[in-house]
Image (tube, rainbow, N blue to C red; front, side, top):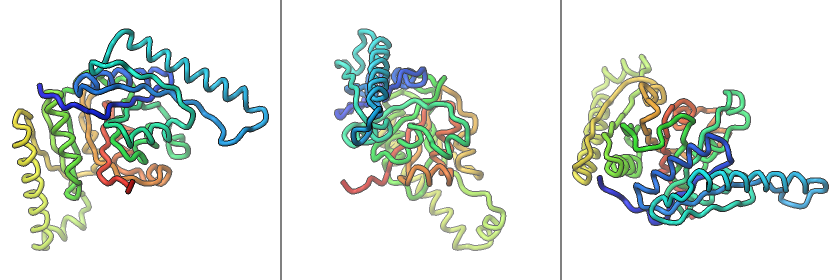
Length: 293
């Protein structure tokens, strides 16, 4: 098995819940695979300015964050993921904001996925969906029940206009984890568009060019990672639905992110957000278009 060292490290957010401790397990394994330093972050709310009568609440949330940090220490015991000491920090601020800032200077941020109903996700969202939508860096969201060890399979959803980060990330992770890779490209099922597509030579030519372009990209990455067993699947259907089909808790899904305001993203139900809400396995969101620093 090959290993890629992540010198900037892995950050995992914890809040003491079982979901976050499952994310900690996943992050610890990733740190071992990538020889990365692991940093555990627990956060607590704090007002931007002193508010009369709010002191007890601040102390309570700070104490809760400290308990979450201690629970993470207890979970790890004497383990040294990545062969290094684990850093555990308690920081003020909203989890999505604090972890989003950390994602600028680390290789990966890992969070657990809480179970929220559909209305909650539209109105208030969650740390996982907010972070995946707005973070400038790469994020993994780990749902409850996901396998914390190496995945049985990695599935990557690719579009023709994705930058190399998405496919390259999937190949690198498959090489590091020693598992097969499925490259999935989904085309739409609109009947009118399909009819026009078949009747229009230019449209058919564009579609064939897209297939050839994908094949070229996969061939280049396969040459770089010759030990990765890779298959290419092109399907018609709803992109999110096809990506979610037959997934198990032992898989890993890689998708490209499109940074957008989190509420807008949830209202429009973007493909990455839909996959995050429905996947039984960890989802790795690669932000291919980073904002100017």
